[in-house]
Length: 573
Image (cartoon, rainbow, N blue to C red; front, side, top):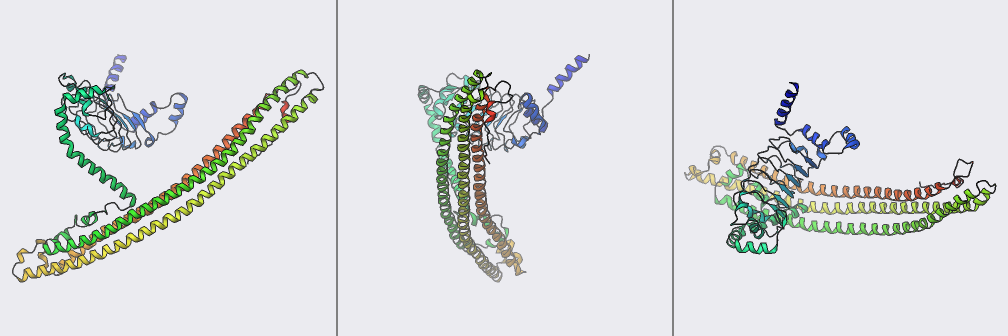
């Protein structure tokens, strides 16, 4: 009875839905980690979820994708063999490169747009009816969508935009069973970037046969995507320009973006501009003036960016030159050390062997010490020569490294001063234009007050008060209404202008600080690594050289090796 109850409990436990939480994640990480003693030691430490890059949550009866945002650095995720029916909550896994959703109950491809680094996607063995929402995964290389319910060719043409796609699998789908339209030939001609279909290399003759069989379909697709290609190229250029301008700290200042933002969500300005042409004419004049200022900031930003890049290029060139010089000097020292080392080691081995023979030969003789003395003297000379070259090499290499570190630190300091001066110059030039822009805003606001007051006065005097916009009707009774609206508009605009100026200044100075801190930290790490490298290299050779002396057979009646008479006093401080 107890066995039956245990079996039923086991079955019910297997049927219980799995919920992704910290416990499940931690358990999976431990099970998939080190085994044996290494695993035991690993389990003693707390699992750092944010450091995990690979996890497999398979056969867990998971119904819903959730709680994976804690794995911020995840690169490989497998949720295969579960009961998931919807792709969701993956948008925070920005570093994900491989995703396996095979053998679930998913019916639609969705919510993958944010996974722009994804290179491998498997949705094999689901209930998907159509290939869709994949054309933004521009880094996708492998796509496996076999054994689904895909019944239409529509959507496959969208894979043409995935320039890195090399392997595709659509086997065991309804569309793969239509012998009149061989799917392999269709994808072979439709996707020129594809190299493998169903993991088999696509042959040139298959592409040719596909073009002949599906020529009309291909022509229609080419015609339909023509305009989208142009739009995508334009969008890609805009993104590239934005990245470039962002490095120059003048993004969204190359056009009317800043000016347009002033009047977005501005009810006060909208009310004042509602009087018509006179106000719009003032706005257009202000826009032209503002465009001139933002264009100057934009051009200054590009010019200063190129100057900073040239300075950075010059800095890197100087640092590389100094490091190559130090490397050449260090290599010469190492070569000399190895030359002496490689000459002494065989000689020491030979002496040790000779001492072993002589020790055995004279083991009962009183003249043993006299027979070994010449060899001991020679060992002493070898030891002295090694100690000398060891100490000279260590001190010289450390001196070279110390000088390189000091010169680099000095170079970093000079570069930091220069780059800060250049950045301050850029900020001052940009601030001058922002001052002019604020003055233009003030002039526009004051001019607009006069125009609106004149409009309201004229309409009231001419008996057309009903033509005054509703937001300005109160101005008939309260003269301060127009001034208050203008003040509200001006304050809103000034805040946006100030915010854009602050953004430019803060990002510029943050970039300088992070750059200089990064260069300094990088040099410190390099220096420490080089010191460890030098110490380890010389120490390993010293240990090996000393070990040669331990092979001498001690004389009968003596506890210590003959080489105990050879004293080592190497100082590598």
